[in-house]
Image 1 (cartoon, rainbow, N blue to C red):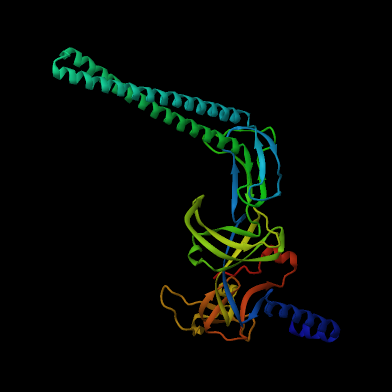
Image 2: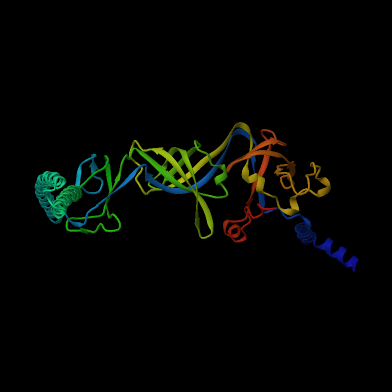
Length: 424
C-alpha cells in the first residue's frame, strides 16, 4: 500500500503538494493556541492629590424664611403683593375686613365711658358717706357726754352708737364701690386695647424686608384665626444668602465636621459648580423606611441670584485631602484578573498578611500581557477616584484597572466580558 501511495505521488506531484499543504494547515489549526479575545487595560501610578468626598442630596432653602399669618378672623379685602414681589419691613401686604373689629372697639369705648361715669357717681357717694359719718361721730360724742351727766338714757346712747356704725359701714360700701369702678375702668381699657390691637392687625404688614416666595390668599378669601394662625405669605428675608439642607447617611455622618468645604450642582445649571461650607450637623436622626440619616446645613452665597428656594442640590462634602502623594486609581484596588491569568500561589512571593486582615493588593502589567504580577501595598486615604499608596508602588508603575473585549460589538455585549471579573 505504501508503494502504491509513493507511486501515486510521483505521478501527481502537484496534487500531492496541495494535499500536503491542506493537511499541514489542518494540523496547525488544531495544535496552535487560540489567541485571547480580550486585553487588560492599565493605568500608570502618578503623584497628585487624593480627595475623599461624601455624596448626598438636599434642598436649597432661604437662610431665613418668615411665614406671615393673620391673628384675626375675617375676609381678605385687599392684597397688595404677588409672587416674587420685593417688600420692605412694615410694608402693607393685605387687609382684612375691619367692620366687626371696629364695632368691638366702639363697644369697648362705650363700656369704658360707662365705667368712668359710674366711678364719678361712686365718688359722690363716698363724699356723702364721709359727711354723714362726721355728723354721726359728733352726735355720738354729744350723746355720750350727756349720758355721763345723766341727761340721756342708756337706750338713747345705743341709738346714737347704731347710727355711727351704720355711717361707717356706708362709707366702707362706698369705698368698695369706688374700687370696683376703678377695676371696671381698667378692664374696659384692657378690652379696648385688645380690640384696638386687633383692629391694627386687620392690616397685614411685612415683619422684615425680603421677597415674597409664596402667596396663599386672594381678595375674598376668608381666614379663621381660632386655634392656629393661618399663613398668608412666605417671605425670604435675604436671598443673597442661601442654605442647603443635605441628608447624609448614618454611615458617612461621622466624617462630617463644621467648616468643611462643599461643592454642589443643581439640575438647572449642570455646568456650574457652587462652592459652600458646612455650618451645622444636626444631631436629630431622620428615619425613613428603616434608613437613618442626619441633616447637614450648608451655607452658600447667592449673590448672582441663580439659586432658587426648593432646588435639588447634588452635594459633595470634602472630608479629607492629601496633597502630592503617590496615588493609584481606586478601581485598580477592586480589579482582579481572570483566574487562569493570575500568578500561581508558589510564584506569589508577596509578604503574607495577618489572618483576618488581608493587605490591599493590585496587579501590575508584566512582560507577558496575560500574566499580570500581583503586588501587595499599603494604602492611606481612599477617595472615590484615587487611593493614596504609602508603600509598594512607585510613580510610573502600570496597574491593571479593567479588561477590554476584542470580540465584535454584538458578541461583546452578549458575553459581557468587559469588567466582568472586577471582583475576586
